[in-house]
Image 1 (tube, rainbow, N blue to C red):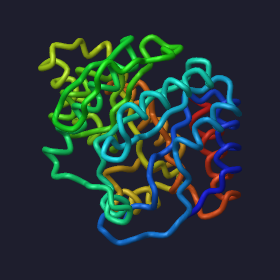
Image 2: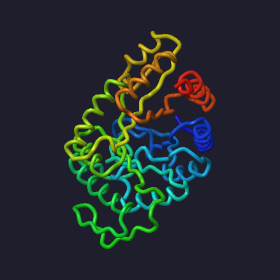
Image 3: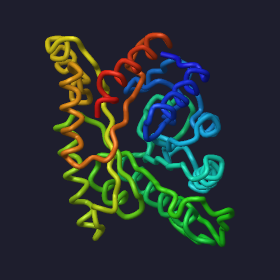
Image 4: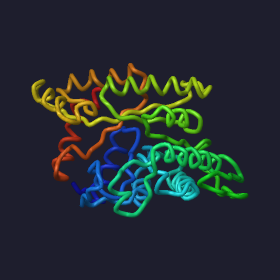
Length: 294
């Protein structure tokens, strides 16, 4: 599925005008296949789209969901984030991950290390980024990165500029608790609640007050006319990463996320239809029948 840049910007304007909290953009180079198989499809570059989103909005937070440190150097990510924080007048959230999508790494010759090495690299990267965002000068001498008297000019508008990490692994959660302000996960209410419990435990192990962390969740959303239609979707391969049902049912499921302690629910739009008109109609219906009633 391809989404034109005009549709992305129209959607951002719509979210900004209708009371949404944030607009997030994925950082990938091709659609995912779960393997080395190549999948064609327009995939706009995240760090080129985010400034445009900032320019056409006034209120919503904007952020990458998420940028892989397997692809981007930490100094580049920090400088991009600070620049966008200035462009947006303090609305930037830097979403980070360790990297995971096999086909894009294979196709473009970007190394996708074994999980332990990937997390080792991520920990160095987020340590550097946090320092570049917060400190005047950064010195860091690690296995993967070496920075000497690296200046951080200008400073972000926000203090601190928030880092969000999307992850479900225990060690990654501990790193998130130590260096980030926000944590994101996928899943239906049961899966997401279980993962949030694990994240709170990671905060405790890191000696961090979980109340200082913002937690968000994303799940595919299907507004159906009947319970049978919802059951069919939830029995499918993406059932554990979806919520489905009538408007009243979805309201109950969103309330359950809130009761579990989540601060933000992010609505992906790639499952909303095959055409701009269909996606617009379904998102508007979801807004009118569900979101506006909360």
